[in-house]
Image (cartoon, rainbow, N blue to C red; front, side, top):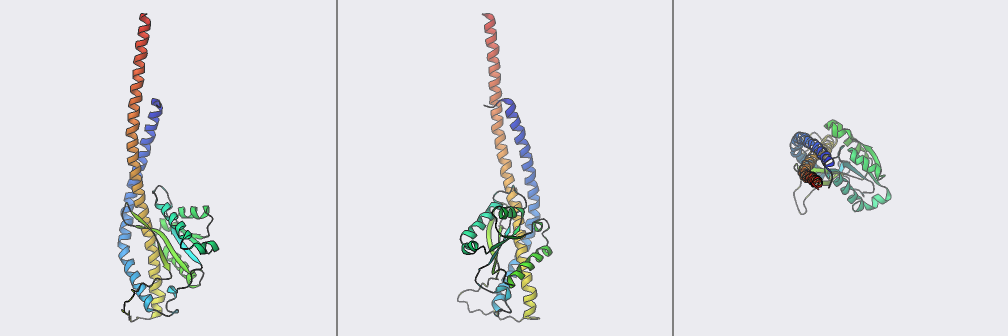
Length: 292
C-alpha cells in the first residue's frame, strides 16, 4: 500500500483534474447551447433548399443547364474532412478518421490505389491525420471552425464547384459528424457533387417548372447558393457535435474523478489507520521492554 504522503499527493492531483474537467464541461455546455440554436434554425432551411435543388436538377436535363449534376465515372475523388481544432471530445475525431479509412478501403479502393483521392481538411485533427498518413491534402481551412460565417464558407464552396465543373474532380463527398443531441452524433459521408437527383422509381410525377427570370439565372444563382448552404450546414453540424461530445466526455471524466477520489480517500483512511496501529504497537512493545 502506498504511504500517506503519496496518497495525499494523488488526492490533490485528482481534485485539481476534477476542477478542470468540471470547468470544461460548463464551458462546452454554454457553447453547445449557442451552436445548437444555430444548427436547429439552419437545418429546415437547408433541407428544403436541398429538396428544391434536387427537383430542379431533375428538370434541367441538358448538360449545359445541369453542369453541377453531371454524372461521370468517379476517377478523381475529393473528400472534405471536418474534424475539430482541439481534442478532449471523446471519439468525435476518431470516428471521422475511421469513416475516412473505411471509404478508402471499400468505396474508393481503386481510386486510392491510383492516387486519385484528394483531401480538403477543416480542423487541425484532420490536418494531423492527413500529414501523418501522407495523404494528398490540397488545402486546409481550420479558421472556418473559429469564424464559421457563411461568406467564408462560400469562398471554399466556390473553389470546389469550379474544380468540379473543370473536371479536376469527378465526385466530392463531405465526411462529418451530424448533430443529433448532446450525447449522440452520427458520423456520415454526404455527397456534395454531383448533385443527387432523388426521383422515386415508378413515379410519373413530372416537375414542370416555369423558370423566372430564366434557367440560366437558376443555375448561376440558386444552385450554387444551395451548395454553399450544404457545406455551411455540415460545418455547423460538426461544431455543435464537437461541443456536445466534449461536454459528455468532460462529464464522464468528472464522474470518474469523483469515484477515484472516493477510492483514494478510502485507501488514505486505511493507510492512516494502519500507521496509527503500528505506532501503538511500537509504544506498547517499548513499554513492555522497559518493564522487563
